[in-house]
Image (cartoon, rainbow, N blue to C red; front, side, top):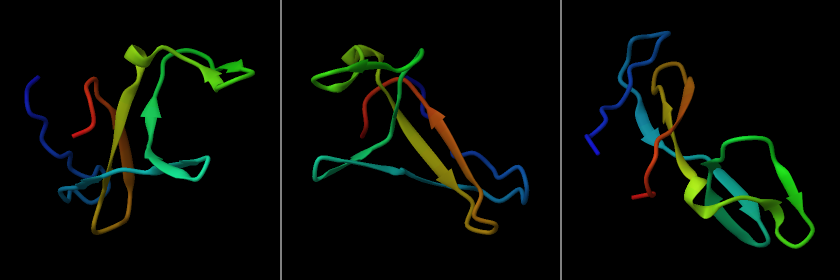
Length: 78
């Protein structure tokens, strides 16, 4: 997979810094993930999904104005 460069803020034209937004669940903290389609509820696991469909979400923040832009790129978290 080719390397991706950090985006530039559409408001201030400043290079953005990468990071992630955290999800909380059952005493643990996880990075956010994106899944295709509508959520389907499971009685045992909360949501039904296929592990191979999970895409990690990288969130970029502008150091000037604080704007956040999130991207779901295929692959695994670093």
